[in-house]
Image 1 (cartoon, each protein chain N blue to C red):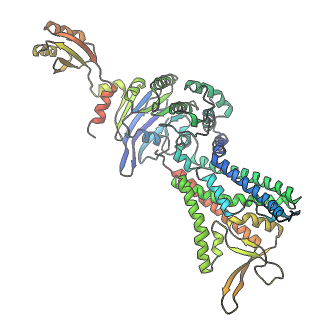
Image 2 (image 1 turned 180 degrees about the vertical axis):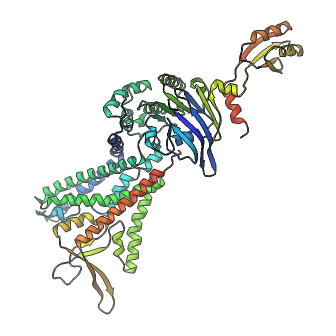
Image 3 (image 1 turned 45 degrees about the horizontal axis):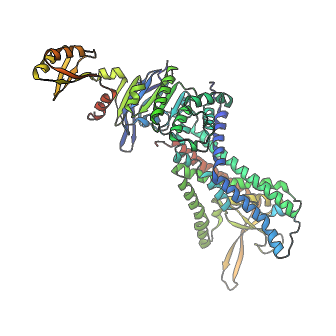
Length: 311
Length: 313
């Protein structure tokens, strides 16, 4: 199966500003690939280069093995794209928009008309498809954005910040929708600055900051590759140096940090060692009031990468 | 879902997208109402004045060919501004260009569809107005001769308007601003009407006006046997006078146009001198070619700017 997206040393400059710097990434077929970075990191610029809206200064970009940098319309035939805060012609109804956009993929009107009710229902716009887009709320336009991105039944779906403008319920619905789309075997390339969102849906992640790719791979690969250890946070009565030293002797305990009654035990393993730690502390006279084992979230990974000094 | 290469399906989709945009915009409706109002006024005014001065309207079988139906640079310019100022630049300003250009359609197809839709709306507007004026004139002045010449007027009006549409498209596509499209075109229109005219007045050179979009140079139809070079009706040579000239040519295929200059002094007051003559068929052919060259030139600029545009926001 062809690789949906392959980028190699992609560079894009706007005058003296380098928006994308030697970016290299690969999106695996069937994955939900999160493209994560703070605002202005270069996410949308990378996507716009892929779709022919911007021209790259250097590097290569391929969609399903075909050169995406020559601006050829055929590249976009199997791609559905939802822009960040999509703007659609306000004088059209939602249904008309889907019909016309569908025809722009070369699909005859009759066939599109069959698919529109399903798409409208899928994105939760039933009953509003005859309304002019000018009457739609931001959230409804966002939903329509997803529907129009799927009008051509694409193998690759590129979504630029799909949750912007949605209320919390809408965000959950969109996440569930994306998961169900991915189950159909489609590849989703999702740009977002919302760490929680990406963590919840994505199987693979690329982190970009100041135009440079900081890390790319599956979530577990990223954690392992960046040596991000889990830890146990405890609140202990009668905490003293003897207890702390005893805890350090437990296998896979890397080090400890004491802050009043709080003890942070950093581990070299993802195995659950809470029982060993609790036994040791109790045997040394400590009283455990609270204990939690934490695994670093994507937020920790993300913050470490985007706040570290530039390479 | 079956996906086809279908160029025609894609072209039709973008064309419909554009036509709906034109039809549902209030300003297009506004210009139609204005044109309808002007047409009604042109029909009603002779009737009202005739009643006021007790001079009833008499049958005139040549009325249709003797009046200019919706001709004139200002009208062409206004219609072009209304139809073209948002067509390309509006997509950039509203952000709708992004979902449009990320569909598997070429920018050339988008451009051609935009031109075609503008042309369709323009033709529709003229057909509606011409039909209304023709019926109105028949009603007021009785059966008309040479009704087939209306089609020549229609062709002339469309070509004259298209010159300005292509200018508006070009400025809009280069600047990506509707305001610039309107103001820039207005600047060109004003400049050509004022500055070039003033230059011609001071230097006495007017031949070059023929090669600018607009009214062009002024000449006079030669009247056989008359020693006065300005005895016949005025003929303008520019791209804005194609409609009237086509009708005149159809009615007078061998007509000659006198071009004159004024000479002041020598104790004889102002003398009108015939400088040179041209056949009307030559004048019409040249204005046709000049108009087509402008349409292609500015359309090319508009297309090239759209083709090269980078869309970052």
